Amino acid sequence: MKNRLFLFVTACLLTGSGFAQQYEKDTIQSVLDDWHEAAADADFDRYFGLMTQDGVFLGTDATENWQNQEFRDFSKPYFDKGKAWSFKAVERNIYINGQQDFAWFDELLDTQMKLCRGSGVLKKIDGNWKIAHYVLSIAVPNENVGQLVALKKVSDSILTKKLQEKL
Image (tube, rainbow, N blue to C red; front, side):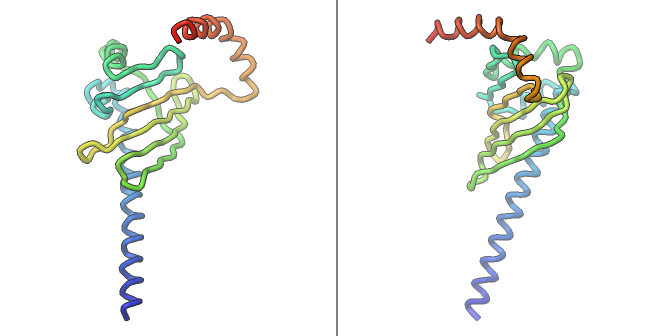
């Protein structure tokens, strides 16, 4: 009888943790969707309210390593015009640590730049998931990489030289 009770309690705990993790993934899914929707709606406060105070946004340009305040300053004129940018997830994978207070994800996005890849990190702060780090990349088909490299060769060479001089 004790064995059955132990197995029942163990099964309930394992099932419960699976439900808890799925709940967290669903919540993160909603946060990311809301974040993208806030940009499309040009809702500055909602958009930045879903990021941590020290959040980072890495854009598609090699020079776009935006710390939170810099990103706010850069983005504000776009939001003020009534439309920032419009990203819609078409695929997303979410991963959560065992303590369920840290998550990372990758997503494929339909954007005005066509398909892009987003990836990032979320932290649970005061019971709410917040985006701490986001990376946006333009997805380039492998057969087009040579053309892209040729297109950006000069500008990348100049930027690389400047960055190496700083080291």
